[in-house]
Image 1 (cartoon, rainbow, N blue to C red):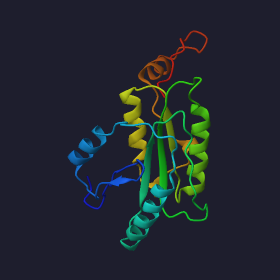
Image 2 (spheres, rainbow, N blue to C red):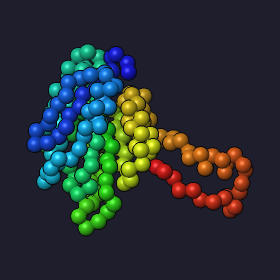
Image 3 (spheres, helix red, strand yellow):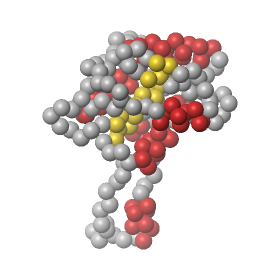
Length: 188
């Protein structure tokens, strides 16, 4: 990892629990591997996270750095909320939303819409939101790699050119007409 790139990890409970800035990849693996849900919380208030991010963003700006928050959100039954002014955009905000399938106790579309609205009103640079209702490691890895792209070098999320699956590439390479080709579901 680039020595100028540092990551900080914050785990949200009643109060955020923070780990100090680091550029140690092994430390990142340990911290991310230890994330688990220990108890259920009735609400998901992101205000304190945004306060911390704004404070750290000011320090980063003084060092000519961009501060970014990547929120990994896994509550398909609780839409997040916040009390943060839309005029205060001091950091880049990205979301990886992992959810259960729709059911009587959860509302993944409502949560996704809320996260998307939050992203648009909070993020200084182009923010991305990705979602997955399945735990396919390959898909999650690809999306996380895109989230790690530099905020000033991003295109709009609607213009991202996702890699095609190998099955789709081979069909196109063989020149098979669309009437004869078999539809292959996308893993995205």
